[in-house]
Length: 155
Ligand code: HEC
Image (tube, rainbow, N blue to C red; front, side):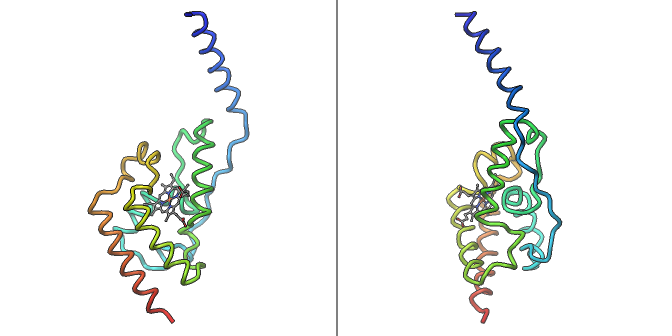
């Protein structure tokens, strides 16, 4: 039994070393443009901070990469979240969205956050500063309500 465990541990270590040689997903780092939601909507600092701390790592062109993003398999998971998150909603491209899309995405922001789906729980597990308090959620909701009213008033 002991021998088997030792053998398994060696296999595991070798596998972990080998997967480090598989190509890592490319890191994303693009300059902030005028299309970014924070600038485009002149977002108040509290909300801007909340978005940057809790959402921008997966929903913008400026994700921050933790040190373990260098290490497989974390590098794959992180790359996957960022690719998938940006596909669904990229706050860096906000100003390019249609009126309908902006309204719909804002509606979903509140839904996802209230249901506890966003930020992804596996992310807040490692990033405690991204855990949103009830107060922060309320603030986000109020902001979304006022932004959606502005969108509704657009011609
Ligand atoms: C660790 C990465 C990560 C973080 C952090 C994160 N998201 Fe997401 N988000 C995703 C992924 C991946 C998807 C797409 C798959 C899914 O819905 O689970 C997604 C989907 C969404 C969607 C659905 C978009 C659509 O059109 O269906 C919304 C809205 C959203 N996120 C809002 C947020 C907000 C707001 C925050 C911050 C409070 C946030 N997310 C933080 C990864 C993340």
